[in-house]
Length: 395
Image 1 (cartoon, rainbow, N blue to C red):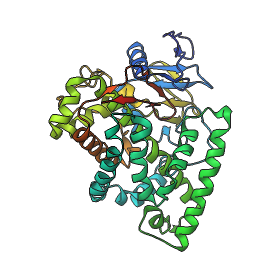
Image 2 (image 1 turned 135 degrees about the vertical axis):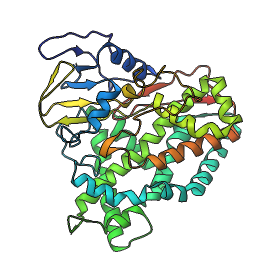
Image 3 (image 1 turned 45 degrees about the vertical axis):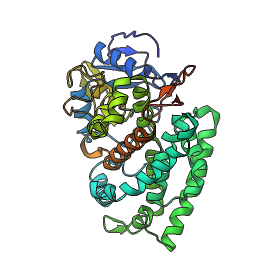
Image 4 (image 1 turned 180 degrees about the vertical axis):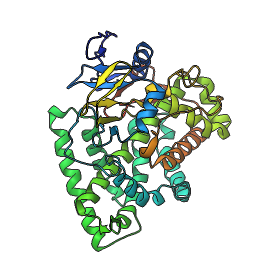
């Protein structure tokens, strides 16, 4: 990311903004987006093929709530004409509504609560496995492993292949396209999920994919292709977002003695603290594809253009929340868009909140005081999701 250098013209202000060009020092992307938001409410990035960016809470919220104009048929600015159609996140209403209705029972607060004891046991065992060492890389030893095993069990993927799945996830979401690793990983994942779908059609079990084989859409059975698009979405979303959020939460706590002490000494504050961490360190960089010409803050956006809607720009907007870039765990619950808004609001938000709450409780019950290793320089990556690559901790 270069210094702020917007230039106005017939096409609106231009800015050299490439959130995918990292890695950057941890926290740099959020700070940069704060600068851009305060400089202008909308601009066109010159990165790649070019794309628009909305920077402020009200405009980003309005875009999320207007799927007729801001279509989810493409959700990454780097891929405006995707060959895939991940279900349900890349569907627009009314088809999106149908799929949400089918999937909702698996992601209610009650459904998440049923998993509480299982998640807690898994979390505790994972931490106990390295707590005695006095150090770990939080990202590789905990953040990536913890939500992934839970997700694999939920959808019916074999947990013994965890390391393999993590390699695929990282290659698909975080490797440069030029290396070829992304395509190879996606091919391997597709083959694995295709086999899983066929197995569940003939030998259903007590998991989400088995249940999904019995779905009907518009009066017809779901196809294998639709199930594959659903499985890919669940795989990528389930393995990356919670891990990314955890990496920022513990990066903050490792540098803030007072907030870290609160987590250990007053665990009842954790649910509200989670909402504040979600707000300040919202990691997702979603986009939408315009279905018609619109002009927003003097920017002439055309049908077919991609528009990025960075959740962190919205959640850290001081017009929506005072002192928005600062973590204040005693703040009254504040508005945030970490899970999006409108018809595409994150279906797994209840499960994600539960996983985050359990992680903070179980970690601080065992490791209440920790620091970033003295010689460590944590860096962050970006794709659709911001997250730390590594976070070496000592205690």
